[in-house]
Length: 51
Image 1 (tube, one colour):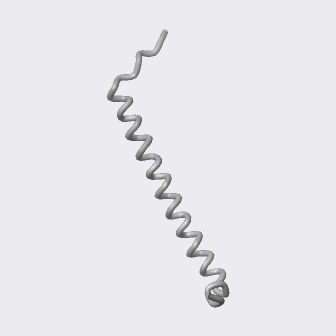
Image 2: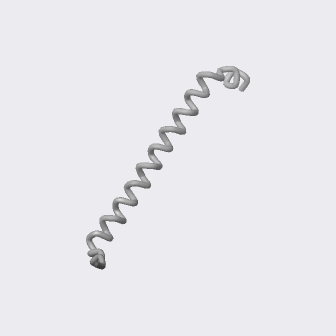
């Protein structure tokens, strides 16, 4: 039994979901990066004092 070909609507929905997923992953990476920078600044205050 063969699968029916995807409808055009499903292709558009998949593209939109893929784009939204990539934006979400980028946002999570940004928040993670900001958190790492802030936490490293808390644990290494001598680095800021040297500047």
